Every structure is written in C-alpha cells, then in structure tokens.
Length: 175
Length: 98
Image 1: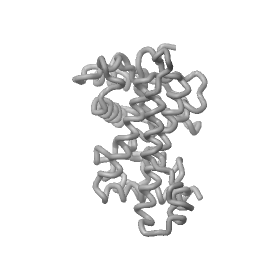
Image 2: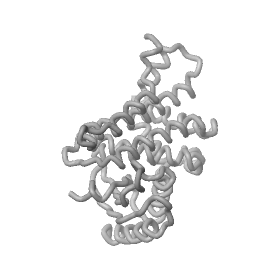
Image 3: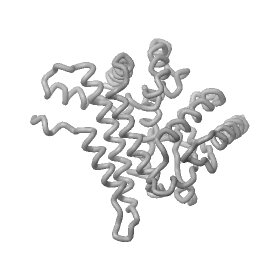
C-alpha cells in the first residue's frame, strides 16, 4: 500500500477547518458543513491516537503491519481509557496507578476530556436531526482537536506511552 | 435522591463557573441532564451556555474552555456520587434555545 494512502490526522484537521470556516454567499455557515466539520475533527483525533499507539508499539514495523495495527485501535477502547482518566476512581485496580499518573498531567487530562466531548459531538453531528451546531462551537471543536494532536506530539514520552499502553490493552480485550 | 444530588452539583457548577474570572468568556448558565450517551449507556450531560465570543473572534479562547472543562471535572469528582459517564459541552445561547 503506498505510504500516501495513510489517513493523516493533520489533513483531516485541515478539512475540518475548511468546513467550519466556510460561509455561504449570505455569510452564514451551513449546518451540513458544521456537522461534517465536527465529525471530521473527531476522526482527526481518533486517527492521531491510533497512530500514537502504532508509534508506541510498532515504531519500526513494516508499513502494512503498522496500517493493520492502526486499524485495530477501536473507538470503545479509547473511550474507556479516556473515561478512566476523566474519572480515576472508576479505573480498575490493576491500572489505577497508571491512570492516576496520566490524569495528573494537565495536557493528557485535556486530551481525554476533549476526546469524550468530541465523540459525543460527532454522534450528534452524524445522527441527531434535532442537534444544532453554532459556528463558535464547531470552530471550538476543531481547535480542541488541533490542541489534542499537538499534545500527543509534545507530552512527555512516558505519559504518552502509558496512555497508548492502556488503549492497546483495552483494544486487545475487544478482539 | 438523584435530583437532590444533581441540584447540589448544579449549584456548585453554577457558583464556580459563573464566578470564575475569564478574560474572553462569560458563562451564562449551566444545565444538567441525565440521558443516554452515544453507546446507549446512562450518562450525565453538563451543558455550559457561553456568551458570544469576543468581537472579531470565531470562538472562545482555548485556555478558557480548557479551564472551564477542568473546573467541571473537579466539581464532578467531588460531588457526583454514582459511577456515571459524564460529558461537558459548551454552546452559545442561540444554539441552546430550541
């Protein structure tokens, strides 16, 4: 598979931003663009986390193997781990110390809280006919997604590795 | 019992969020709603209604939103008694009025 086929989080983020900042000739954003922008922002974060897990587990693997591994990182596993970080008292005993370490890092706590927020927003954007998105909210979601992707790149390696390890363990359970 | 606990949490959130000092963000109101999340699990939704972004800005300052999010979590960890998933969202008054 050509490398250029990789789903790149930063490209998704560009798409999300162009959608939420697009205006009609009347100067108003279209709900359909705001919805697609929010959904795309979520997927930018989802794939950024997936690639962080791959970089942690298989940094020197064949590209095809890395792609397969990225595909096995699923939404529920990330949600579960982010939920533990948001609520460390809900984490199982055997992972509680690791979860506590991650939750004490402000940037990674924000990653977890934004992921949970974006996941719900993505669901509303894709399925809830009654949901209405404002431009400030849609732009905020894209900004949040961008901040999360930057945090994943810049957070201390040990903290990122702990986050990725927990996701990998949870993803394995779901197989 | 749950409504009392939710009222206590709501009071705490309104107190903390509306009195916190932000340069570019004003919290107009806070609402709590119990419902189901995207996976169909019971969840608590915290909806924070914000005043419009500052003139010329497309959204609220990222630092303000992050701080609000963390304030909500602090209150939840202190006051939410059940092991419930919770979600916080930020909206403009125009989008929440429906």
